[in-house]
Image (cartoon, rainbow, N blue to C red):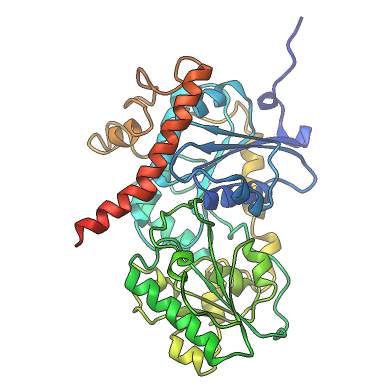
Length: 445
């Protein structure tokens, strides 16, 4: 009997049905990857979305997954090697790698080895938000994907310059926008007037500065009892995000005498922004979400304008301000030219921001003979002292093939092994997230 054609053998334009996979290593990257997958697929297409969560210290919890608001048709937690095996067993049209740069590079080499010259999906990767550090390093680790998404015209120009500067193909760089923008545009003050401070897990990274920001926020609430002042938290105790939060604000606020108009809130940022009149942050991507909706936005200068804080990205934005100014009633006015270059799309162009990417994907899916093998810039020839270490961290050899003894490389774990693995994973997370920070702090005494 003649076998039926697979999804890979039929042009996407003919099927109007797409299978999409997202591999993510944290709650933030799952949010970016899942929402990006939605933006990249035509509204008329029937889409199956499978989510794969890379096992590690920041694997998102069920609550964090629900908060994103994207329902996957299937969701599983995997090791890198398990994921590579799944990609040889399941035919997909699009694969979104929502990982840190080293993870993207490892998967590109692993997939190249696993697929060989055979049919493969379109590979998409990019950045969760503002790119303000490790530009060259992160970009070159992502090179080899069919599309490297840039969240703004500003980023697209920088990305191409890096690739062209090292002699790498820059055609993969594709300008889009942040996939989680949206919501009702700001139309005027709420009752009560609401100030929201959006925290970040690792910025600032020390108790003194975090305590200072908390004190100023509480002080703002006392100075303006008519306002509602909200501390928007990223995660609940025991949950972890892309970056380890050693000093969560929940703990710093314990035992304090708080004013009645000061509250801690969790939940979807979009829902919080629905009632926000002034968004305050050090450098959170939430600032771009607020600017998209034309909500007054302040990027704090109290701790300086420094690369380590990320607020240097907002120079020229018109949003830089101090708590002293905000206490006195200042409301920053964004620079329209700066906003237009940052992918914020406050001018109504957001609806078409992903059109170019969708068109490129459609052409790649319909490419006669399928897609060529993956071709990352880093190879054992170009980076012999760097690449092998990156691959080894994901249990891959220099050729991208799983190393002997790699987790789940040869067989499914038995029930006992599964229990031991879960216990070991719990111990590892406890060590990374609880014990290690304490040891580091003791070393500073």
